[in-house]
Length: 224
Image (tube, rainbow, N blue to C red; front, top):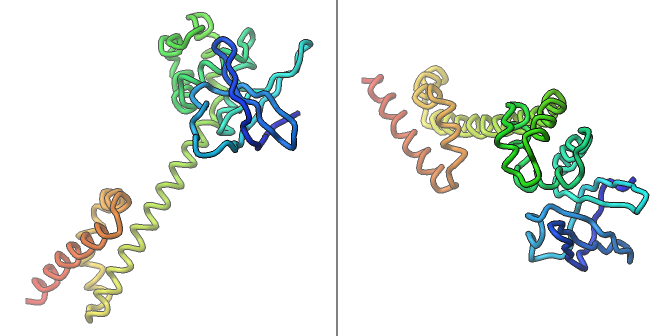
């Protein structure tokens, strides 16, 4: 079974509402249906990488391509529901991002699902009933990504505090004095961490100057 393809787009095609490409791989043209929103997305290059779902029928083989593997995997879950065909799966993924679609199913938002063409109330309810307990791995992936982002932000903030510590230490302040004074920053660690992550290098330098002035003022007050 074909799972992944990389090649050059040599032709865009459309049949009714279906859209896709012909991908040249080693001199062989693979006809692949894509989400319409992907057609012509990257105009700077004809090369594309796709995660593939392959369906075999008596009348031939159909290939469905997705930029992200979680799109392909959610598509597989959708068409595993009895009576739900690939065109419904493609329509849903055209209208929703993976996280939005998973959220709609898990939160039983049938009205939201019926906004997609071809999705009636019965189909929406069938999707919810059969899939609501099968999509946890998609939300786990999102939580994992969010955790990684938080770790990166925390590490950046720790590095920022270390730089301030070294500057103060070079000015002759001792460990206890520094730890007490930088509470001005670390008290609002989450807020300052988010702020720091959104700033350019120049803006970070300006913020550090501001914090150093506040800390030095606090230290000078204690010494008087």
